[in-house]
Image (tube, rainbow, N blue to C red; front, side):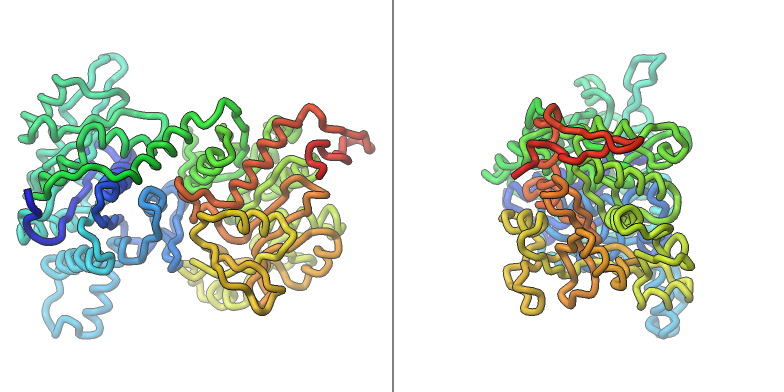
Length: 594
């Protein structure tokens, strides 16, 4: 079968309930079709009225993922980049807020020539135009567009209507895949298909027929239920794809390939089937490795605050951090066991700081606000004094600097302007250009966002990590002419506050090394202690997790995991010496000696 028609569109729509894996399904299908030699672009549609994801509570909505451009997006965009192995652009993200804002601004500028501006056709056609624009700018063969929420949600109706119109205009080039959940009520013990049938029927009421169903469930679907869904939903049995719960999301493209989903999709799009390329073998090797890389398990603590939502504990706020750890654990030949620790529990006395000794590495990720800050600072001090590998990300780097100033420099009350702008010692202060934005209550999209260059200095942990890595996508080959011929790298940022330059000299004289700085030397990008003082005590002002990929782990995460691995292998030879009421690690670990 030869290709019929023009550009191809695949719409992924949710049925029954949200949060069951539309993003992973979209990413996995994109990976699979890319492995068959097609140029694929992924688009996330978020129906909320926020213009972007930047002002949303991460506990409720999940991680805010930042693109190179600085656009703050949904966490699914992170999965898209990780699965495709390439950077996405602003054209790959759409919200209702963006659409309505653009249409209203165009109307105010007489862009519609005095017409009565309405949801149909103007909002709908703006959505269609953005779908088509994304395809053109990416120069792709196939677009996969995930519509957030579930069928029946009032807020995503307009996007489904736009997809219906696109199908009407190009009947051979558009298909619809529903990702639906099949519950198995505990008291019944039987998988129920009726909710999925109703979801398909509701989508049909919008004028959209489902072509393929990806059936999420705790266990695999049996043939009987596949046949039942197929008959009720008017599709072929082979178009009901079983997607049971699995250990690793990186197995999903492999499972889809085994179920021939790629060729089923191509057939529906009137494209001849293709075999997967040899590049898919690399993906399979990685997926096996992340799952079963080693019996050598390393315990990593993530000390944060965005975990609790009601009576439930979620980790979506730190999704990219979790994935970056997995990739680098595989690269280091270990299996990471990740423990989430709420910093507030230390402050309330629910957890003793000595419990940190059981971990082989500690990460304090990004965040905002005062909650849990003292708990985090005390965790950082404990890690520094006990020689536990520590990695601070954004806020975690700022708090690491504050801890060092308080404990080593003796600057009592040292803090950040974010918490107490009137403090005597503002180790972390607001960036000058941000003061006006805060005064104007302009918080959305107004931080230091996106990709910025940093100069990394020789003879540091950071330089060693970046210099040895050949796969990292953010490294630049050219040398800085202003900062001692240092290595230049590019990383993604999301912050409003910086290390106060007035304290940099004092901190450096006290032994803290700023191994990464902005090219003009004014902004501190990476802080660390030399290995002669600590095995791994590193913080970054940027978010390295945003550039970590399954097939290209981030060099700093990999260096951290190697240090954690070393701690585990040599814990038994640690030497502790009593110093007053507390144990202080003086010769932190024999194994860390050069």
